[in-house]
Length: 253
Image: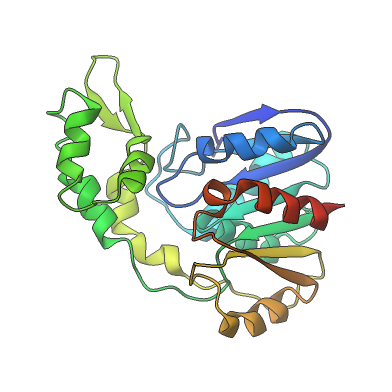
């Protein structure tokens, strides 16, 4: 699958992978801040953003998409950063293709299994009468019955697009994501440790990476470092971008 992407800057390739329900836009500001030192690739994963839709929505498929992307663009020793679901994609890629990357940065996700916890978001997205609305405000109002947090609403509404006929539609492949949502929590398999530098960054106010996850992290990635960003929840790059940038550059340099 040929993924949609945009690039910024010049230098060693640095690939960014967004989380579930996200798009490459989520990392644009952060990527721009690093583009004076790296050539940043902001990628839309399959069934998200402007990348193609597919009935297959698994980490194995997304890891293969990343392999194809790296080969198509002749990326040598890329650094790969993934947030949440994008972090799982990066880890699946690393254990499947350990020779195709330089360093890995995983933002607020561990290798373990996670139970489904996106039910309210799916209900909120499903509540939007996508074929009938005439404005983003209508979508926001319909979604608000299930999702009260304004920030989450605005994040999800970035997935709205106008069709050629002037109507609205979703960029993301909502039916396939909904039908495969249990797969998003899948644990990362490994048959041997990955001896590459890896940085795990957790939000100090997030419970996505717990102390109990550290043994798993070091078993799969023996060279891993774990950093905690204070006053940040799961959306580390939105809540504490400068602190995250400091940790990333310290790790890379």
